Amino acid sequence: MTDEGADERADHWVDVGPADKVREDRAFCTEVQGCPVVIVRCGEEFYAMEDRCTHDGESFAAADVEDGEIICPRHFARFSLKTGEALTPPAYEPARTFKVRSENGRVLVESPG
Image 1 (tube, rainbow, N blue to C red):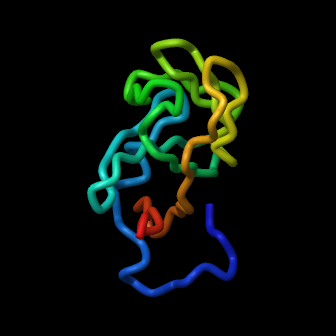
Image 2: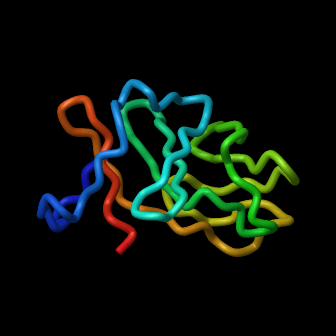
């Protein structure tokens, strides 16, 4: 997913690995400049958000992904991959999202800054 108008400086984006490692049914967890990040593919689109459920801090490493949503493995709160919005209790606070794009077979995440 490329965000038009985004700053294109090389140091603004962090290469997190090959695009083919990011699956549609399971989260890909990594770290971007010390921030834990989960990356998910939905069709040709990639989404990135902080790897932390806002309800209790659980990692999304074992999370299922369905219909553009990531599901916390502990209490099953659902979050929108596109916006980070908490969609179901027990989570009420949105998750932090990051711009992400695929370029030359690689996944790049915007620096958390």
